[in-house]
Amino acid sequence: MSVEPGRLLRAATDPAWYAMAVRSTDVLLLDHANCEKKAASTALALMFAYPEDFELAARMSRLAREELRHFELVQQRLEEQGVEFRRLSPSRYAEGLRKAVARQEPERRRDLLLCGALIEARSHERFMGLVGRLEAPLADFYASLAASEARHAGLYVRLAARRGEAVDERLESLAAVEAELATAPDPEFRFHSGTPA
Amino acid sequence: MSVEPGRLLRAATDPAWYAMAVRSTDVLLLDHANCEKKAASTALALMFAYPEDFELAARMSRLAREELRHFELVQQRLEEQGVEFRRLSPSRYAEGLRKAVARQEPERRRDLLLCGALIEARSHERFMGLVGRLEAPLADFYASLAASEARHAGLYVRLAARRGEAVDERLESLAAVEAELATAPDPEFRFHSGTPA
Image (cartoon, rainbow over all chains, first blue to last red; front, side, top):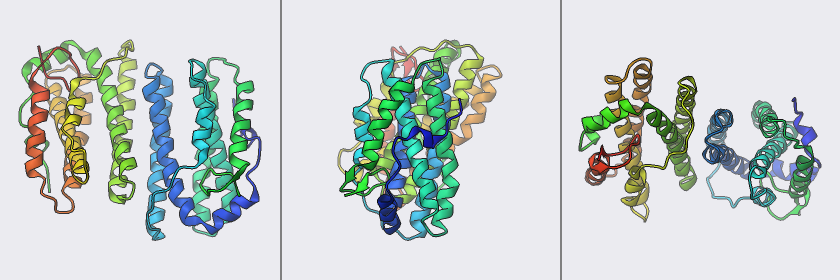
């Protein structure tokens, strides 16, 4: 199955989010570093939760290595741009998605993988949107990272559906939750925040 | 500071542990896979706990990537040898060390790094001991992994002492705890278990 990441999303990011991002590159980069760390940590959590699934573990291990490599690159950017470190509260996004995840198996694993796909698809959409709005070298930086987000989105969907499971209906309902979180008015600006309130 | 990992350890692994390891290569490999995952996860936990420390984060991110790569190699070995997966309870080792870690900062960070050094040093010692006792290809496999364990041990000590902190006394006392855990009679065989009871 080939997955075009934009087709997973049920709502486009509002132009107001991009306008805020261009004005807030320090917060954008600081939160982006957090997101790469969290993406690696989520992949590891799947490895710990389903250790008997060797294919999942091998895929998640490689994905986590790639996210960590991206983390290192974002941190280098922070240093090069002289951004002063500060701790940022997480956005409502990941927690909001987590609430929609089924508690019982095997639905839980399916949902965790589909949420992974949606998060990567949203990241890909915003990376691509930032490329046309930011100046170099930051625009080039986001362009260089975008392809792997698209690849990761496809990987997550394939893993969720790999044993012939029907995932379309569930993907549709999780995508609706994701779209609401990514576009409803949000008082806080973060990488995955909603439309600036 | 150059650190010879064997010099960190206060007691050598008992030959009985190696004898058991040679008879129990399935458990050895299964628990080894767990250990590589846990090593990556511990490095990530340090990145989340001290995000303002860019040097620590960059070093831990690279270390985690290396541990994940090792995890992938161990899992490939499990597949090649047709080892049937089973969940293993963790050994007393990591939890025993964790109990000795200071609760307050900055002592906590120092202790976490020194424990990291001791775990890597013990892994290095056992990898090297296994090389001479296992048959190829498993002996070659452990030989190929040993150098990075030594490097990681040195890295952890350097990070603990990098701002001129005096760590020798604390390292001595944590090394005594580690030596007891790694050599006292232990009813359970694991990668970091004590002398088989």
